[in-house]
Amino acid sequence: MTGHLAHPAGRRPAARPGLVGRCLLLLLLAVSGCDAAPQRPPGLRPAGGADTHGPQPYRRGVWLLLDAGEHRHACRGPGIGHYRYIVVQWYATRDTGCPLERIKAANPRAKVLAYQNIGAMIAGPHTDGRPSTCVTQEEAAAHDAVAPADAWHVHDPTGSVLAFRDPYAYLQPGNVGRVSYQVQCLRRLARIAAEGYDGVLGDDVNVSPGHGLGSVGGTPIAEYPTDAAYGDAIVGALQRIGPEAERLGLPLVANVGADPQTPADRRRALAIARASAGFLREFWTRWDGPGPGQGGATWEAGAALAQEVEALGKPFIASTYQGPGSDDPAAEQQYAVASFWLVWDGRQDSGWGYDVPGDPDAGFSPAWGPDLGPPLDVQRVRVGVGWQRRYTGGLALVNPSPSTSQAFDLGAGYRKPDGAIVATVVVPPMRGMVLTRAGTTAGDGA
Image (cartoon, rainbow, N blue to C red):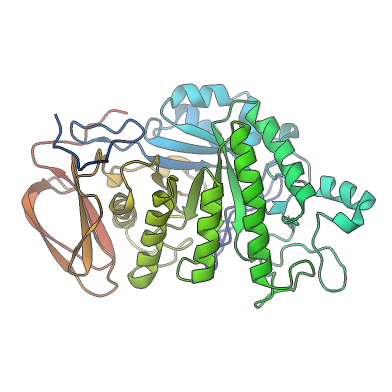
């Protein structure tokens, strides 16, 4: 889970391939000049207004509108009404074409989050004086000039200020372990909180430095001689910033870069989840751009992490990022959304979405299927090499096996995405399906 769309003012990057095992995160920066239901199991209840009378149009979408002018689609795009989380650049606040107040009016069910990068710093110009990073390079330079022993920059072993060693070299990593850096970040969040956002997406919350930096295959960081030291610093930073942001009335959703198959990464990721108001995982069920889908142990590790986050009482927010991939887009969306339904606990205000850079209206698709309401099964149920989960409005099936198809006996008639009513179905490897109860439809309203 690696790669992001970081870009300086006026430039749009190409997508970068994902690297299995190390998550570097979505780093999108300000662009200059952007003008009667079956009984539920005990303890389960619908979250976020889930309907209990059958399937409704999907309403748990995650919409990342972070390139120049993309936030305007939230005022008029066809996806309006299907989203629970909409992430925009902070400079959208007073945009004449689609300001924050209009986004919220057009999407009354959605929480609108302002994007802020926690782990990196951008240089100006900053559109409308609202930068996309918690600390800017100008602020760091001014601070370091008077307090070099408390530097907000990080350095290589020769003492030179570091920048990312990848296509995003215009970004500089922040010294997240400095208390003064964290205080500056909270000053920025206080300004955002005063403008009426429902929360903030905190990006580049990585449990290892990445971006060509670090002790494993990268340029060493003098302040953090090991990747573990950096990971501990980012955990400590979020343990301060997350609760303080909550007190400001600006819940912080952390976009966490971690390999859930690595125990130390998983431990740090869950510590960040505890300190945050929500947990975003990019590249849900598929890697970056045209990369392959995730199956087998990789899929299981991601699914288990989602369940662990929700067990902490935190929303799990997933994005299948940089689509479409190498497979059929509808099939990969069904795999991703069915996987989401498998792990949702029915309580947390979680969501899933599909991101198509440069075409924000292409994300939402009928392939997402309906909102299934609350779950009937407390947990996902193993069926051979696959999994299933029953909801009041339907059924989610997933086969994460990379090589073996799985037959499911549904026990009753269910409607497939193509409209056929079936009692059994075979799901190919690394595929998923959302079915509705026979006699119901998903609806066509928002």
